Image (cartoon, rainbow over all chains, first blue to last red; front, side):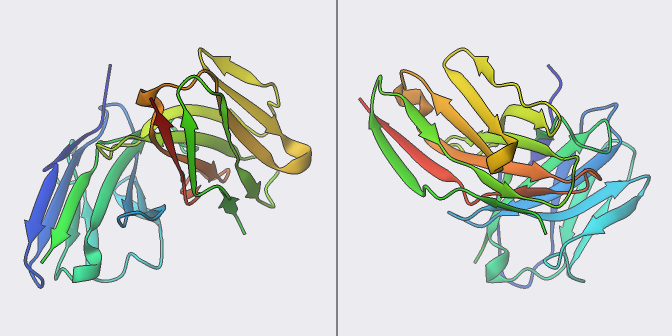
Length: 114
Length: 114
């Protein structure tokens, strides 16, 4: 069964450091998403991406964040200068159609900023 | 504005009891999608079901069933004969017709006691 793969599963980084979270979406999917979940809280939308550009982004997705699809298979989320409050579980998702009617989420990357 | 409310923060049941998780949503869209996800202690998001706004038929899948009531804007989830492995956080989510983002509820933490 096809799946979205995220690496690493857990990353610890020092405050102020740059971090890149990686995702390999399902191969024939065209729409890509990042969500995050601060421990014990709800899952929040960060950004959606289609046709090599951002479709929509939330208020959380400020200038510290960027996304890229560097090689046609990976979909990355970069946080330029991490803050303690960036500690969260980050989920990548991909979909074949715009409605994301079958949401395939990755298993998540737990980011801990110390 | 879209909003999903899961009023039950935590529920505990004894194994083999039935349990219903409530979900109430708000949206101005006539077309939308509703979802339930399970988040076990390992942290990943597991897709359970998708419903579009035009399909009010209730659905049963094994021990799981869903009751979609458009008149009350509710999409409740029932687990019959609960098992310890059902212990998890369950999220209800709403997608607008653009599919660009999901709106998650705050989740209900279910503990099934053996």
